[in-house]
Image (cartoon, rainbow, N blue to C red; front, side, top):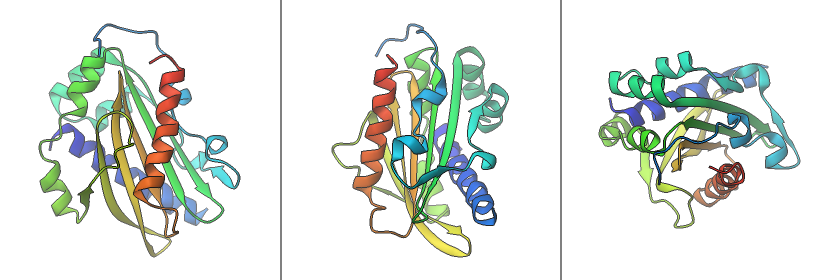
Length: 205
């Protein structure tokens, strides 16, 4: 599997784990590191009615965890020399929509680009897992964004959603929106992603 394929798989596995728990209960130069928690959407960013799922995986992603995710030797080499930090935030709404927001920061934009574009096996992976890559709205943020539609079991109910991946300078970003409500749509996941993307801009990245 290529790197982006692993990112897709890990994102889905994280979502399945968290949802199960929730229902049960241009330059390559280095830059100043910012706290990765400032680069993701928290409930306060999402609006009224959203709450964190803190006990189900929200928090900092360590280098060791990132190395376990990025199993390819070339990706691990980049992680070891360039990984600056990552954060994952999982939130649930009163209407049972779910948002997974994640950002992985690297020391150099070129390293983030190398990892982000390692997606050569993505079509085969999507076919195998019965997911689809769909057209990305023109207003989506970042460089070469990828939008995937998926279905996951939530409390025994098949729930549809979207994953958007994109790159913002030295940051590889992910936004997943899940739910069986009318607001779960490509336009809504892009709106949330644009909000997340502005956090990186505000942080000077």
